[in-house]
Image 1 (spheres, chains in turn brown, purple):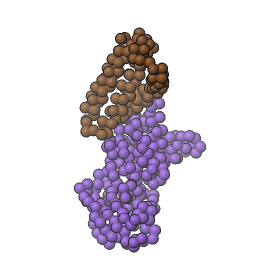
Image 2 (cartoon, rainbow over the protein chains, first blue to last red):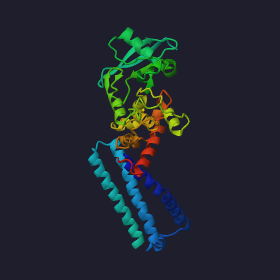
Image 3 (cartoon, chains in turn orange, brown):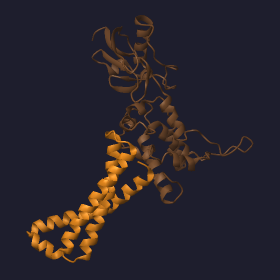
Image 4 (cartoon, rainbow over the protein chains, first blue to last red):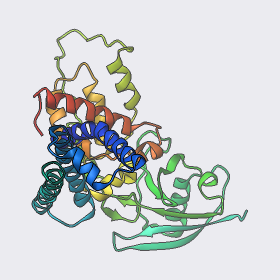
Length: 109
Length: 240
């Protein structure tokens, strides 16, 4: 890992810390109130706030996790540097695609 | 306790094996004494490295019962209460022969980390006064007593997994120079430790601190480098 990746990983961690907290509070709130899927979707549908919240969350996760996986692959696999970077770029794009698709599903559906 | 030590010593290169010897047990006996006895009385072809015998030169580090140690200051009574010793060369380094590890990669990384002092003055300049109580000087003093023994390098998991990683000793040296007001090469040095082989690979396992015979804390030095390089990068002063 170099200093650029280090800074990106720390910055995304700093972004995720409060988002994880809010995410957990939302989960506890929803389960405590006994909200159904339909109730939740009714609240998230068309909400720019939830779209931004989880959109930023997904972007931060995709960057943060990819950098971490890059380190693990570098230390524990026999992949060359180029193969490793291609693999984690694909992994990050996959996380971003799946995550943003889920965000779109709960906000736009 | 028996009067004889059961000692297994690594013989050969990386394809070698442990060979067993019986060594007389003595009072205040060090592991280096044991190795020396084997060479003098059991097998004169045994290769190992030592110089000062008083914990200053950093030459005699070996793996003793699974841990890297300075053998001249390691008493047998403290590490082999059962009377059994397993002595091998330092890990994470090529083996030249028997207990002599090849230190070349270790010292090459000192050079890569810009571990060489670069003077900011010439001999005709007045001698610079260094206040001992500045934060930078205190940080440098806390890390400066390294004897280059390679114990931290042999103990480092990250070196084991990533052979390009500069390692605790070279980075600790860079940290002392970055905190030295007399040095003139800090921009280059920060760039040197901020690349793909640099300080950001450290996982802070703290094995270096745990094993350092001088009780230094290279992990703290590396954490300092991470902070300084991150700040320098965000200010546009260095590029990875």
